[in-house]
Image (cartoon, rainbow, N blue to C red; front, top):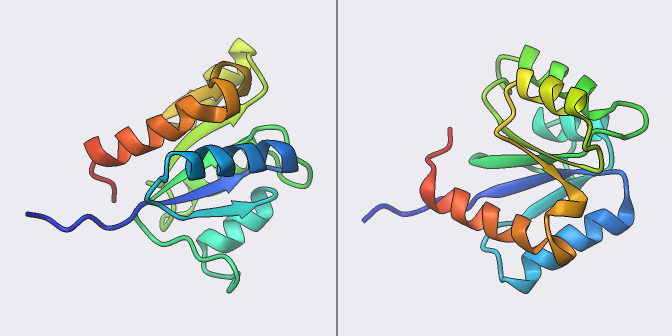
Length: 142
């Protein structure tokens, strides 16, 4: 029987309330993976590249990405991520307030794994917590 390596989640979210809601929802179901919170795309890239000693994001990992952030928005982050050979295969789920078709299309063109609108994810992000748990169980990550 294979030993599962714990999944790490990198939450890239500038909204403290949304970030806390995600963290609470994962704690509520006793999610078996640590969450690293980065408040914008620049902080997230530094963590992924090992440039931030306080934020380690080992593999396997999944990135939950907000699109609307200061300094570096989600689309700019995705462009940097996909252009970096060491990070290009990272799995990204967009978690955003934007329900615009143009944002959804643009994000999928950047090879995201899924696009979720915060309002549709359920009370206190309950569907998100279950998705991450099921995803980690069903999919083999790099």
